[in-house]
Length: 158
View 1 (tube, rainbow, N blue to C red):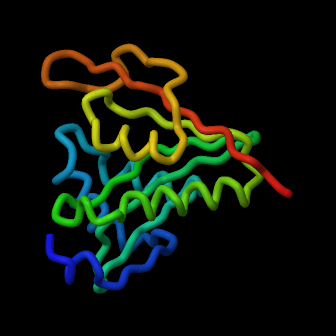
View 2: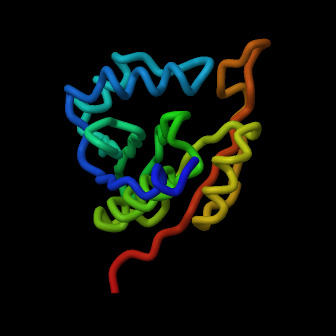
């Protein structure tokens, strides 16, 4: 992508119900087994930290974070395929980490497909490490795919 595209202004804000069509569209174009529109709607209603990254009045990425009992769980983080490799995933991840620290979270978790090397590289760059595997966690073309469970300890407070 050109540097002009990479340098376009962006902002991160809370996801609104009106964003769900764009979020669902990105999800469908990104994954063979996408979340449904209803799952995103339920995350909003449940009060999860639902965040979007906006570029030129368009949603180009989103993230969902659940926080409870001193822990956080990244449920979904995705960038529109047309806008990948521009640092937007890292920006969204940094936003989630900031939110988790502000909520006094001690540790943050996520699941990722072992085949998603790009995502794993980003998470490792940010200090996540593998703590477990969840057998047959993800739907796959033939059967199920395991998930790698990654975690990062967070320093809370001064």
